[in-house]
Each structure stands twice: as C-alpha cells, then as structure tokens.
Image 1 (cartoon, rainbow, N blue to C red):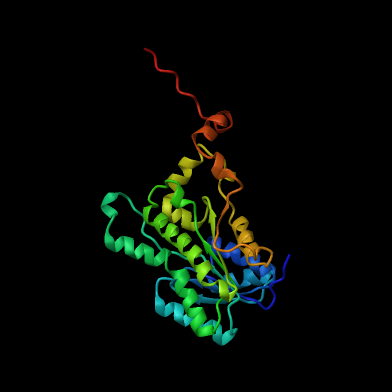
Image 2 (cartoon, helix red, strand yellow; image 1 turned 135 degrees about the vertical axis):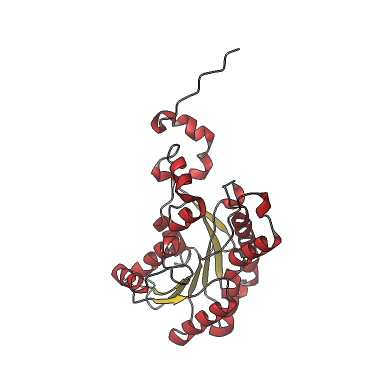
Length: 274
C-alpha cells in the first residue's frame, strides 16, 4: 500500500466515529493528520495517543465548527503555518436538523441544514486554495444512501447529501486543470455515536429484530475506501459517488427478510380466512 509519510491530511469531524476510523487508516500509512472537532466533543490527548499508536506522527487536533466561516479560516491558517500545505481533505463533518414531521419543514431549518451539510466541503476548498496557495490533490466527501431510500427523520440530511453529491460532479469539472481528484463516498448505516444521536437506541433495537449485526457497515471499511481514493491508485476516478456497502443495498428489503425469516426468527402470519 502507498505510504503517506510527509503528506498532510485534513479530516473534519476526525476525532470520533467514521472520521476517527478514517484517521486511523491514514495514520497507519504515516500521514500527518489535522483533525477537527466541535467544542467539547473530544479528548485531544487520547485522540493523539491513539493516532501515534496506529503509526502516525502526533496529529494537530483543532476545535473548529464546519458551519462557522471564521473557524474554517482559522483552521486553514493554522495548517499553513504548521505544515504549509494540504494534500488531502476528507470532508466528514456535517450538521443537519432531524425532522419529526412536516411541521419541521421550515425555511430556516432547511437552509441551516444545507449550510451544515452541502456547503462546508467547498468552503474548505476555497480557503485552502486562498491561504495555502493550492488545492489539495485529493478530496473525499462522506455521504450516505439517504437520497435514494427512506430513513426516519432524514429529510434534510438526505437533501444535503444530494446537494453535495451533485456539487462534487461539478467541482470535478471546475478543478480538472488543477489536478484535483474529488469524489463522494457513500455508505449504508454505520453504528456510531452519530447514528445513535440521529435515530436513537430504540430504532437500533428495532432493526436488530430483522437484521444481523453485520447488516451495519464498519467504520474502518469506509475509512479504507477513503484512503484508497487518495492513494494514487484511483487517479482515473473523479466526480463520482461511490457506494461502500458490500453489495447489501441491492438485496436489502422485504424479500431479504422473507428469505432469511428462519434465521431471523420472524414468524409468518396465518393467512386470513374468508
């Protein structure tokens, strides 16, 4: 596998969940990591110790809210002053409102969700180019299958993901002369703190009645796919939305539950009479 020694990788929301799992993959290949987190959400020393244990140099861990332009500018300035460049950007952090019903469809809520999900990647790119003098060669935006399938409460989140996936296509065209490879990386459900915060333990318990634990993707699987897209081995790929799901999305659904009903312990209802 390609070594990443001397390369600077910014991972937003990189101190926990999917972002941290991705950080550990890059650390194992020697990357110099810059990890952001929201206020009070990370034990910076613990994060640093685990990155070093995985094989990377001590990371720069910065408190930075992806929805605040001032935080983005300060972060990129700190990266320039310390390292002088950004080789790869993993845009993982996003903020969106969970929708409980149609009454939550407000203009303010919608626009706030678009700002927190659809825009941060491109603000980071703009600031990196302006402050560091060059775009990162690789950009990976973490997305989900939300735009294509119903998930409770996911209305605004899915809309933001659809926006960012569309923008990735156009950005690939706009950045082609700069040698940038930008792609969106989708996954199905990943059991993380973010999943619990969005859907709650009740939903997780309900799912466990119908699907085995391996139905969930592991964060490290998605993290390795992100690294592969930044490794140079996939330089022919740009402007794409790539699904990491072990093929599960194709056969997920009622037919899957029916076929595995015995293993899942799902009893068939007696046919109605008359």
